[in-house]
Length: 292
Image (tube, rainbow, N blue to C red; front, side):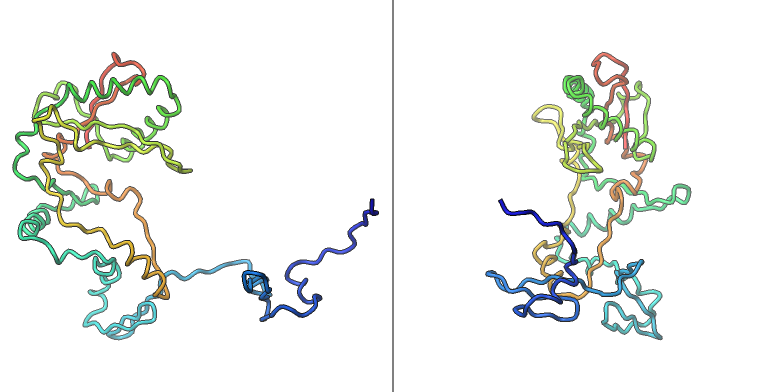
């Protein structure tokens, strides 16, 4: 057995290539090493590390009648009024120009119902009804049976139930949902069935899903059956990916709980009711009624 030697000196990778024999290419602090796959890059990007790192996401400068955005100048009559180009639908590759006559009328009617609540600082919107909502009967008994079926799963998986209850509490604290009186369930209303979907996520392990296709019997209507869906506004994924290859800058944003950041008008809320139990492991416990 060969005698083991004690390590006398450790050389970092940033200095190691200064003492090796030629056979690689060096450019400042970057080194190109030849391999069977071709050259690979190693080394450091800067010999003067800084304590702070600054990342520029979007640069905007206003000069007289010009807006300079991502290195491209656009002539505008009034920059203060036209800054909306930064978040317009066209810049997001969402095109609503190709809509049918029916969709155009639905959009116009929907936009005409939008109001703004100065008290809550939120927009209030109405459902885009097709006009058949009166046929949307109360499905209270069916929704109750669906909830009681879930009690079996709640008893078997306490962690699942804990996450479920945490979601409901968070939504109630943020005023996304509100509790309503149980004795008023016989008025014009509709109930949504709900269940949890497990996600492999560090922040959201359970996602609460509401079934808007839930109906009472084969001949009954669901909430989706009574609402216009509107034009397709999902951006073309291939086009979005290609733009990340062809452009110099990318700006990404996310609105937390985006679809909960607007209110539903009072007369439409009863069609978004759902049931819960005071003790979800006991199907005979006190019944709670919520709505969005």
